[in-house]
Length: 290
Image (cartoon, rainbow, N blue to C red; front, side, top):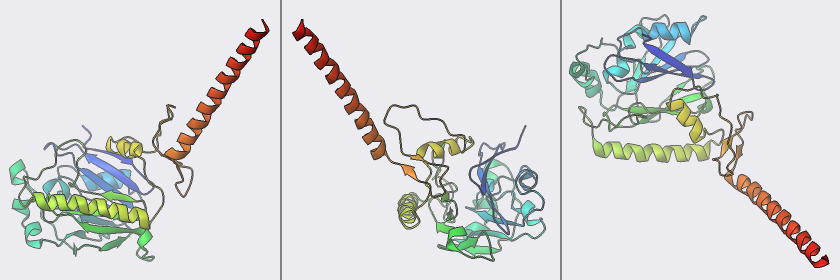
């Protein structure tokens, strides 16, 4: 049985899904920067996730690792200790919104509820709202950074991470693609969760306005959630009412709008009506001559 499966979802980012015995199937990510490989969440620890990333993604000459945990649950921090043993390790980073909660690993990781154990690890940096992690420390620019967003609700220490480089939002357990959201965990808060969803929505609206560029279409997002290669695009089947499409050959991500498609459809319809009218007029002329 293969413990991990991965796909490259963008130029720098890989998504890895763990096939774990606890039925969690966490989504894990590796982002290849210039001077580091940033790993977002490390799985349950039941397998050698660090070794898998070494062999399949961060190959020789290998970049040092930096781990960001989206929250303290066992299926997100279980592999931290394996990365910490790697040469040049840049540390474990996680939210400092509730350090007492995050440090109570044996209880709040939920490992006991799933009859498993999690090896303890050192948190090297406590993150806060607006903190940035650069994919190139020698060139610290917003456009190549990861931004931290505090997102309490699922847990009090939950965070999301936004990549300004590739316009990707890593949401941790704030959103699941295949099942209901768990708000029955230790430390869960429904009101905080609702506020978090509103906050993330407002953040995306703002960042799309401030940093225009290539946006992924609903079809591309769906393909990513289904673990299919994001660059394997299906051809449009012309019904004249397709969603806006991104021109992947353009560095600026130019979008063919629905309005342009609608205008083309109107032109075709008008041309068809003119042809019918001309045909009927000729038919009437023939009848009158007879």
